[in-house]
Length: 325
Image 1: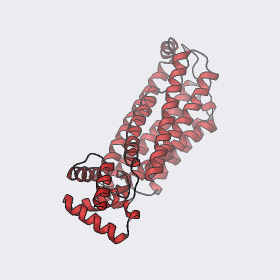
Image 2: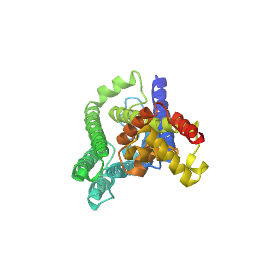
Image 3: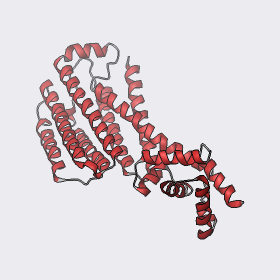
Image 4: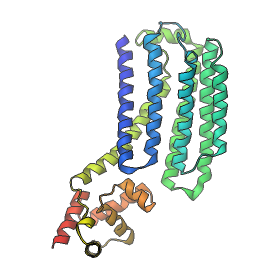
């Protein structure tokens, strides 16, 4: 039954690798720091999975509690978990468009102290439980603190960005609580749990499956976000002609103004049209005009509708033909 354990691990490795590469592509094309933080988060997942795999596939003894537990890897595991706390902090601060504050340092210091204390306790079920409990309690505390900060932002950040931050915060909070419960139950009933697990996947004894489920769902969300960026890029890659560089500025501005007037565009739609003709993605337009991504998508849809086309490339082609007349 080692095949199930192996395939499960390979699936997670490939999934994390796909997310990291997709986020890197999205960051290269948008310059949005959020994708950098997502890359850091999934590198942490990858690092943690590597450590777990070493424990399960090299040192595993079926039925034995924590043959080489996390506390036997104090340096690697502590550095990994502490890095994860920092990544979560900066991820939400990026969503809130806020800088690191002294208040955010408190959970990190408490967690560091717990790791030093519990990492030196002699190997036992209680030590293993305390080690992970310290992790979950401090992460949950950190998420509650960040949630308070998100709500305190009020109207200082975009409504959609604030809603996204709150939803992600709640999502991670729920799964961290579930992971804490799972870790507690499996520790209390280790004999029965290991017997059941060894019947079909003997080398998955170190997993917290709620955390794996959380990372898979988060991976899906990241891939959908990156898909929008990739789709927009591919749509505009067919005709990457920047008309503003092909005409003198006064001629280009005049042609653009006439074209916008012909379509009956509003002032905001004219601003977005100018950026569309410069081959900018929705994300880039959102950053350039400091408006939400949803607002940009609505305006782009209206512009395409007024031009009676369905794709950006068709809009650019229509503008090209308009200029050449």
